[in-house]
Length: 139
Image (tube, rainbow, N blue to C red; front, side, top):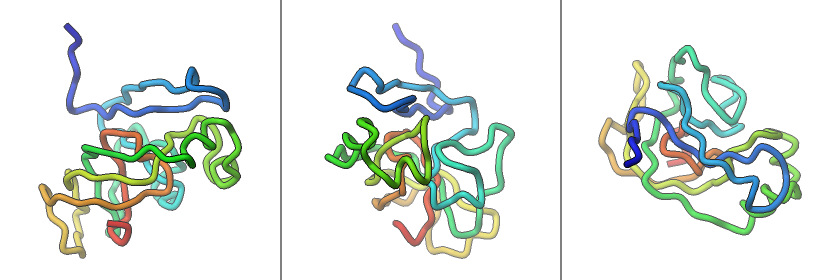
């Protein structure tokens, strides 16, 4: 039997351009999430810092229950998606669309979101993940 630690983020990462063989299931260290390139004031994509991080007032952590797979994700894997190369590079966690629940809100939560709220939205890469940091304006 495989033991899965639900407290650790799991994601699909691409280490370099290529075929489907480049897709890797990665289990991240405790307290690390994926993050889109537009939240670089927290951390450069594709992951948050290992030593914990302060969640910005305009962001939440979404426990991702579903994501879409689109043609754009294939072009990222092939190395043909220009903004993926320009803003993130490799390794990259692809994906844009997410659906899940709010798992964490900032200390100074200025939004109407609270832990447990069901949400859907988009991120700028990082959706192929069980947890992702997303600006609330994108939900």
